[in-house]
Image 1 (cartoon, each protein chain N blue to C red):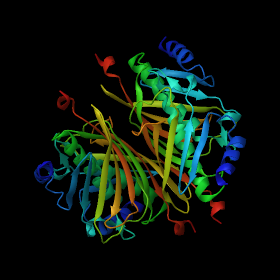
Image 2: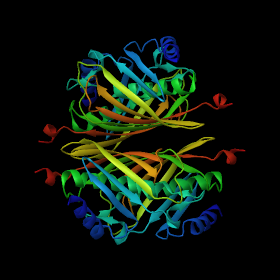
Image 3: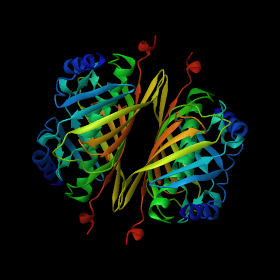
Image 4: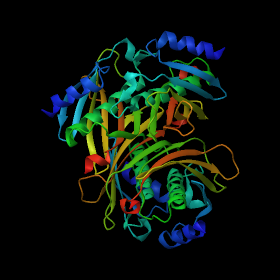
Length: 137
Length: 137
Length: 137
Length: 137
């Protein structure tokens, strides 16, 4: 139920994220995917870095909404990403997030990104979100 | 001349980056901007984090092309971004990059992002690009 | 006065930091230095990375104490460092910090590290500190 | 055998790291620990952040030596660390590293740090090392 609620929330708030879909959410984790087409590629025939950054940011947001409920105002305070391998230009980019800290004011998520079907990550990210104070009341 | 060459390169390789424009390039630095509309916003009426990440990544790429010539295959190896203040929903997001290391194989750029006209940064990023070996020959 | 107070605080709390000294503090900034001897070096005859990490962490702490008063319980929540050039094995390592965000609960500092006398940074760091809630009362 | 070789190397090159010991190395991973005493603590009675940074940097170095052989000149190019929980002041700090990329010129390691015996990490780090070109010949 929380998953369908999050899907509805994204449709309403981020209608331009049509290429992103939510596979799973729950247990302090989430999995989302991004379809890859011409607009996601860069010279060298690979997925542009900012697509991975976007998906890393989104999957942590989804994991937080799944864990703490609908807190749309939670915002990223920092994000670090390392690119490890060249993603496939023909397959979905899939991001798995695990929340490694769920504090009162800060949540930290770790993300591995894969070309769909692969087992070796193409990128790894860690980001911190701030939970809005009003939600803590 | 290098500036117009980079603009042409972006038009050809990233035709979907129509909201991004290049203000300046040269002296190991660059300035680019992103128009802000409905698609760049997130709940809370502010610019979505991934827009800043995209622009930070692009402005370093532009500064590298300006410094080292047209090396389209140079790729991001890591990026770190800290969000400092809420950007304006009504003004362009402007990114200034200064290259703080230009090595043989790695280039590091530092980026400050502003809502157009402000003097306090809304975000700060540092990223490393790998220069493709063939370019070093 | 705040500078001498911070120096006393360090003598008491970090008596083993005898090679670190505080040059300046004030205006949301600070400068500290680390003497370099055999114990700070690593293979290749250069300063070991963790010495730069330590100094980056300390200089932000000093800048925060200078800005917000004696808040010893403020703690680092994240730190990102990029190594840019080989530091001198014979000169002090000097770190300059500028606080780029001073929020109610989070403070972000940017640090440039130099071999004493040089103008090109050997490393660049950004870190976030959490201000303890009790201090905000 | 590689483990004892690395232990000897540390004794010779880092004789002042007497509180650090190497538990395991192999399979693109390593585990090291740091004894905690008065000098490792900070106000609040917890382990100082730079001790975790040092140990994160060391455990990746050990994992690289274990994987690629004795390459003492490999150096850190960047490190990102997030602090998640307060470490115990009375137990060893233990760091586990997994190398998530072993490239020709760059190696990326991911590190989880624990208070000995705990299952929830007190900190999480990711760092990149550059492999010296001569080693690649």
